[in-house]
Each structure stands twice: as structure tokens, then as C-alpha cells.
Image 1 (tube, rainbow, N blue to C red):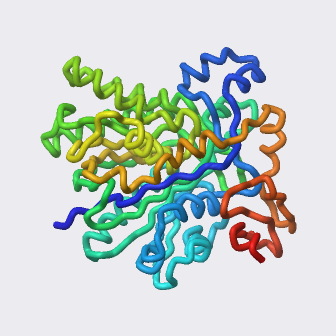
Image 2 (cartoon, rainbow, N blue to C red; image 1 turned 180 degrees about the horizontal axis):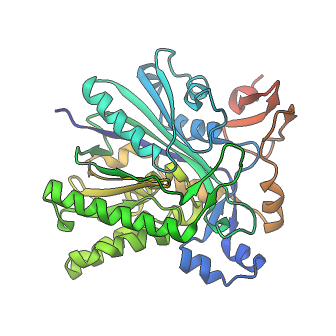
Amino acid sequence: MIAVGIDKLSFFSPNQYIDLTELAKRRDTDPNKYLIGIGQSEQAVIPASQDVITMAANAADQLLTEADRSEISMIMFATESGIDNSKSGAVYLQTLLGINRYARTIELKQACYAGTYGLMQARDYVALNPGAKVLVVASDIARYGLATAGEVTQGGGAVAMLVTENPKVMTLERDSQFMSQDLMDFWRPVYATDALVDGHFSQDVYREFFKELWQRYREQTGRTIADFQAFAFHLPYTKQGLKALKDILPEANAEHAEHLLAEFEASRVFNKRIGNLYTGSLYLSLLSLLVNSATLKAGYRIGLFSYGSGAEGEFYSGLVQAEFKKGLINEQVERLLSERRKMTIEQYEKNYGQALNGPLDREIDFKDDPAKFVLAGLVNQQRQYINQQNHGAE
């Protein structure tokens, strides 16, 4: 069977953020509760001029060549922050990105897990259709409300992956172990703009799912922790993944355990400064590992744990390819982080209520948003998206 996996990987998040030390002081909380207890230092703030469509387009646009746009046969859009209960977010991407009209456009939802399902479906489709290319995008905005227990685990952004045969970044092995259980650890009714969560219960379910799937994986494949050079986790906050990794570290010898902990630190560099991405969180962690690890090389096996509340989990592995750096955009995330504008907590709180919501026509001021794709407003209950590169030339 042909090797299939992630050929290119790209990320986008808006150009503004808050410092969580400043948020802690505003909430009369010890900053170490956020910095150490949660494992977060900064948080992306989503302006009204960005939504899951524009963020997805901004992420994907950076990795697609003209040949890719003409050859993609399917767009899979994973989100739990969708803008329409009927129309797929993927079809908006098709237009914004100039992808050929002979492509399927599908939106997927299962909390934070849907990006993984999209990736697995893309893998299987390419395996059955050699030469095919599938664009998988995971784009979300994490919202829990101001001054709530979940506020520190907000964030947002998008990860885009091009899935092909003979990929440059990572091949996807056919060893997935997955499970589902009807639980109420996190949910967001259709009438709500902010998520509802039973935080401690959700943390416990996450770890129990990981341990059970890891044990099942070992039984089904015969592999042990010694077969893995690194692990990447869904990171609603980075301390959560560290707790899960430590649950299985006793299975490793001291030297290997130290190595896996070092690789975990590499895998959370970006997430600590962006925050929660829901469907894209695991894949930002993977990107962080690929960029920041000093030891990864061809043939190394990475274990990936995906979790979506409600609940569904999956553990699988991928093999790093020799040219994995060529499938990444050089210094993309580092440049994004260095160019962001820090907001005061007062500005952040004002921004929180400005997202486009409701049926009334509205114009959005996007002059301070440097992104290529922006949301300009609502006309006749239709969102108005603009390519600023084209718009500026008119």
C-alpha cells in the first residue's frame, strides 16, 4: 500500500494577544496558577474581522501552490465554531482559495476530535485514489466567557494540512485505536456563543481515555513506549498533555523518559502562547514539535492523542519523513508571534463582545487587521469576506 500522510502543514492565528500574567492580576489570581498550574503564558484574541472561515483561509493559503489549487479533490473543514447550520465552511474556502470547482466540500463536527477524523478520512481517500490531494483544515475559536473558570483556556486559530501520497512531513500509520462514550463534560447548545464545561470531570475523562486507548494500542500492535521517540497531545491547556504523558512514563527507562519529557516541552512551545484551538490543538502541538525539537529525524515514530469532549478519543502514530522541514513554512509561527500586538485586559474585554452575531446588517472595521482574508460584515444575513490583496488593488 502506498505511503500517505501530511505533505504540508501550516498555521494561522490573528495578530493580537493578551499576557496571562496581566489577566491573572486583573482576576485577582496568582499568576503561577496560569503559568505553571495551567501551563499557559499568552492567549490569542480573535478580532471581529476574523472568524473560522478567514482563519482557515489564511492558514491554507500559505501552503497551496497553483497546482495544488487545481488538483485538490476534497476539502474537509473541521470546526465546532461553525457559522452556518446548513452550509459547509469548506465551500467558502473553495472560493476564497481559488480551488477548482470539482472538489467535495465537507464540514465535520465532534468537539475537538473532528480534525483527526478529517485527517483519517483524507488518508483513506488518497490511499484509494493514488495521486489525489485532500485539504484538511481545523479552525476554531475557544470561548468560555469573561471571568469564568475556563477563561484562561480560551484562544483560537487554524491549522491546514495537505494530505498526499509520499508526503514530505509525516506518513500516517494504520494503527488507530479509538473510542466514544456519551458524556457531558463539555457542550455548547445551538443557542449559546460560549461553551459549557465541567472542567474537573473533563480533565479526568481526557486522561482515562488516553490510558485506555494506549493500553488497547499496545495490545493490538505489540508496540511499547520504547517504540516512540515523541508524543503529541490535544492541548486545551498544555499542563493537561503533560499529565497524560506522565501517566505512562513509568513504562519507560529513566533515559527514555527524560527524552520524552524534553520532546513534550518542544511540542507545547507554540500552544503555550496561542491557547486552545479545539480541533486544531493537536496539530499545532505537532507543528511545535516538528519546529522546536532538536532530535527528530527520518523514521522517528510520533504518537498522537486526539480527544473531543462528549466524548471521543483516538490514538495513532506517524513516521517522520526525511524532508519534513520542507513541508513546513520557514519561521511561520515564530514570525506570527513576534509581530502580534499585545492588548490590555480592558481592550480584550471590549473585544470579547464585538464578534459578529445576529441577523442585522453590519460593517466591521478591518483596517488594523493585516491578514490576507478578513470578515468585512454582514449584508442580508450573508457574511462578506474580503481578500485584502485584491481589495486594495481595486
